[in-house]
Image (cartoon, rainbow over all chains, first blue to last red; front, side):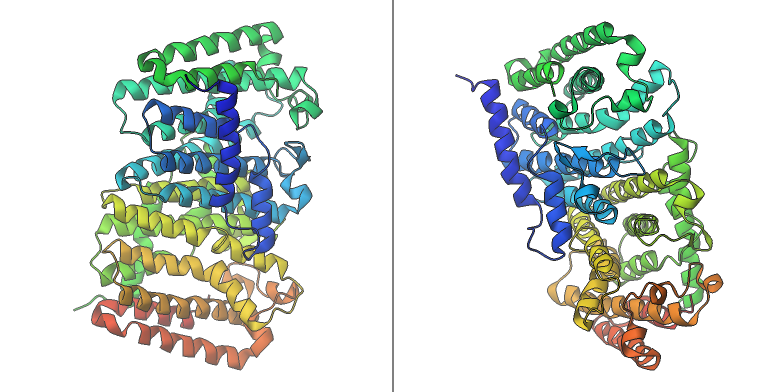
Length: 295
Length: 295
């Protein structure tokens, strides 16, 4: 009898807290403020969506536990660094993240800058460690670097920045989200899978289709929640995108059509998983979670 | 007959310009401003000290050319990203770098932040590429990540930040420089060597001793030049450390003793290279260059 999804999810989240702590430099190591702030940025918060995707994709191919754990920590560190930098005054200028003061509010801007920089290095160091075959590691490191850089997450943020106050056409908006959020979500799925085996073309294509659907769904639902939820529930400032006149799915399609799009993408994600059968149960459940979440 | 040092150095610097360009995303690729700004941050400037060290260390062990080139580009991208972030208003707040406006002056702060972030990813991507044996690559990637992160360059910057206006004792000042500048200089030497072979203990120890000497010498000479040279010669704001009451070797030891220390470190560097014989000619010449440079 397979573990209930809620229990599995909770177990991964609890495990991740200990794993992230063990893969970060200890807070008592010099320079202490930097190491303490790195832990502040990463630990005790977040839905751990990307690690859940890594674990779920790892299950499809029976990936070794240590490799999955390292990949999960690496993508979460990249994600955490991007949030720290994204919250800085020169970017989104946010005071609240995961219900706590942002890193530059709790510490200062210079520390927040270095926390992000050092977390990125740490992510690659963690992924390069462990006992997995070296050629597999190199493929995973390449994938993570591509997803993080100027043709991935950073590139998406650059397009996002340039688009404030501009009504981006829908194709360009989707391109922006595909890079800003989608690239790292897809890398999470791929890294979990690659920890298990070298992917065949049809396997890679199926995981790409799944990732594209949940990546876009993630953003559509983010936009919906930004409209419908309050800051206390979200743990970050709600209504921010509308206030800064950033283009969103809700502003573009309206609320009802956005909800319908999210549901369509959820179904697409499930269809993409068909070739894996029962082994992809958790990936399917995560597609449901991403669309049906309330925070 | 071995090529003259000045010619060799010039050839590496010229090659690096083309290599860096080929290992950066093209400026016409979307997002254009980000890619253009990445090129602005990396190309057309800099003494390329770290790439020179990679090439020189590669010569000691007959490392394959492509692997040396990739390592040289990777360390230079990490160095360039650190300068971009270091120049930001929340850090050193500098307007001038390599004789040109700093990235956040030429573009804006958000772009400079993303340029640095994306250059770090790019460095790991470049180092993960090429045809070198995968286990060698993983060792090199690990080394670069360690040298860049919180127990390397970023850690040194954190200590530096925390020390402004405080008269650090000499051992702590050296620890700061060992991380802030020394870690990446040492990684440059090690990556060049590791591109050639897996190092024996005595080889690694000799290169470590060499790197420690030139790393410290580099900082001592930086402090001397900050006192004695002008901004036009340096291509960055001179006298800045003294103005911000950051501790320097000159403020601590005086000018003459700083000059003597630099010369002593140059000799130490040469001694460390003894076990390699003539193969380490370029590394020795680079130690001379680092101490005798005027910019």
